[in-house]
Image (cartoon, rainbow, N blue to C red; front, side):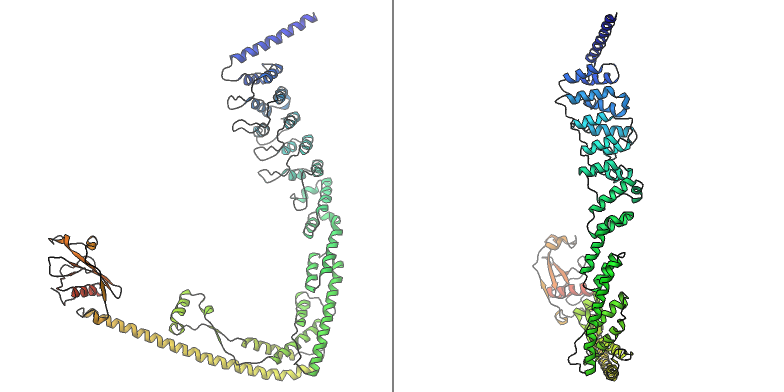
Length: 608
């Protein structure tokens, strides 16, 4: 009985297989392989029979319906849940088992198989991935066969997105092991590293870092720190990792800002940088820069800050001693200019307000002493003025051009003027007099008392010189204006004379051209003007008319016509010939042409 049952089952299987092959033969247009895959996925053909068809097919590259056979399997895997895809996975394995099968070979405009599978599934599910679709076995099988692990969906997401979206840690670790690119960004600009950190996947991230697949430092860490802090293990791991990478000042400061709770990890390096910079500071301005860079390390910065201040105090004391000795002798011949007291006041009183030894008052007196010395030594010259043409006309190109072409006298414009040294001398003397009035606490009182009247006398002289130069300039300015007015009057007289002269000429067009200073040149008689100037049709031999071009010395141009059979000359008279104006000789016609074109008047002399 048992043997009989086995025989029946075998016969049934053979009958079903025979029917399947018979249906393959009846299919028209499709390849045998296409039909076998369709029927197997529909449950009408056994997997074993289809696998035999795949193995025995001459080629797996023949298309039907725009797709080669492998894409039918991929479509099924992408659009059916994993528990429905057992047969499809076996067919995929059968394709891969063929020695001539290339997992990365694409057909026509279709994507390569792995990319096609992932993108089709992503689009089928409405722009997402689901753990119910595409088994680990499918992806591992394809990658093992040579499919690229760096495959992207239509949103730019990678296979790591598939693993994360489906909660598949196993695949995530597998993809890292296979060398997936975790720095590829999707259309939102987010890469897999960003997403792994945001998702708190510490183990996968650690695997990638240990493997060397990615590099993370404080500059490349783009995630929101509040998101990272929600995953304590990941937070601590990244803090330690980024702290090891931070070496220079900018990296350490950024680390302290982002990992505010783990400043201890970079404390030693941060403090050592402060010590090094403080030790290199040789000027007070430099130690202030260090102080601003390390505001939380006063214990390291302040000792060097005080040391540089004390050094400047010693320098000030030495300058004071030299100045006091000079003041007591009253001999300024050996006095040298000294800027240090002014710099001391500027730094320790105005800029930084740091004066623990109260030396600013001393610096002010020493500064005042040198100011008085400079004023006493200043020679008050006879001032002169300086004219700056460019500053005066910089905003007016036409005025500048006029000044350059016509000259200062013709434009009548007074340019900007300065009195070199005058204001500087007055400022110095007034500052020195003010310095002498200050109450001296450091031994300069007697010197200031003696210098004050000398400086006031010098200031009076300076003021007299200033008034003198201004009076001289005012006289100069007035002479310029007078010359300008004279020049303008002369030009106006010339224009008026020219106007009257032209009126007289216009009223008497019978004078000769020579008498009014006009000469002319002529070309040769020809017919070239016949197309430019209308010729009257009532002239019997008008086609024989000749024309003479005339150029006058003032730029005026004209034309004279002459019919060979006539004994007169006709001026063109502007637009069209004035055939009524006929002149017995050429010179009168040329003169008539000029007066008509220039003054729109008719010459009677020589008219026929």
